[in-house]
Length: 153
Image (tube, rainbow, N blue to C red):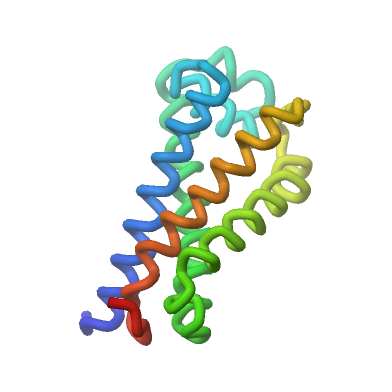
C-alpha cells in the first residue's frame, strides 16, 4: 500500500474511531446514563425499542453501528478534504461546520428513518447535542488535516 493511501486510511480510521468513541462517552454524560445504554439506543435504530431489553450483545451491535457510521462520516470529510485544500487549511472552521451538518443529517434524516424512538429535546439537551456534534466534526477534521494534499503542519 502506498504512503498516500495509508495516510488517508489512517485519517479515516483515527478520525472515525476516536470521534465515534468520544461521542458515546459524551452522550452518556449528557443523558447521565451508562454508555451501555447509549449503545443500546444506537442499536435501537435497527432493532427498535426491543434493543433496550438486550444485553451485552445488543450493546456490541450498537458499538459496531456507531463505529461504522463514524468511519463513513470521517471518510466523507477526508475524501472531500483531498479535493478541497481549504478544509485542511481552515480545519477548525471546517470541522465545526461539518459537525453542524452531521447533526442536521442525523437529526432530520437518519433518526427519523430508523426504528429508534425519536428523542424530544429540551433547549438545553439540544444545545448539548449540537455541541457534541461540533466536537465530533473537530475530531474528524483534526485527523484529516494531515492527509495527502494537506498543507497543514
